[in-house]
Image 1: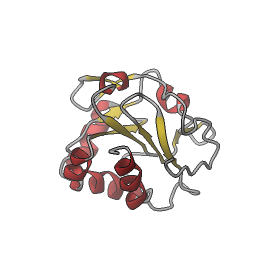
Image 2 (image 1 turned 60 degrees about the horizontal axis):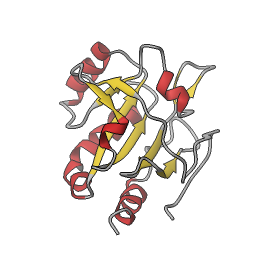
Image 3 (image 1 turned 180 degrees about the vertical axis):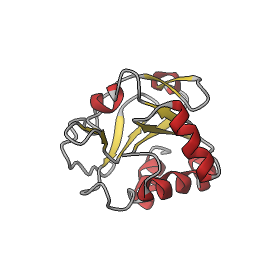
Image 4 (image 1 turned 90 degrees about the vertical axis):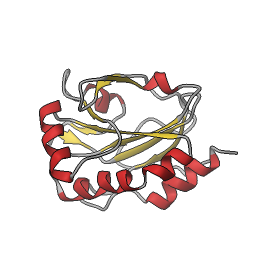
Length: 166
């Protein structure tokens, strides 16, 4: 069984079905989680805010390793509580990303709340990683202790994805 780190009040657990959702990507295309069922694993990378230091390191790091995600038959989907124009401005400032950045904006933070990846009292997202297998089952959850703590451990993420290849 994949390592599970559950902190910060995340209620969804390894072994549960991932809630389906549809959100627009930065290009306006609608992305539905269930469209990947039977085809690819999915890494959902919820993050606190665009234009912040840790997030501006985290997402480009995944972009640089996209070939490794592809080799592990995994689609990266980043989810932030911001509008498409804000996402596009941030992506441009980062020099681009090569995976979808989904706008959980209307209705506000609906998907982030469904995944308990939103902090209501301060109004922005949590940094949470979910790995969802091809059958739509959560196989890994990682939530850092603090928002300003570095991004989730990529080595652990890749170990969890490698286990899904067996």
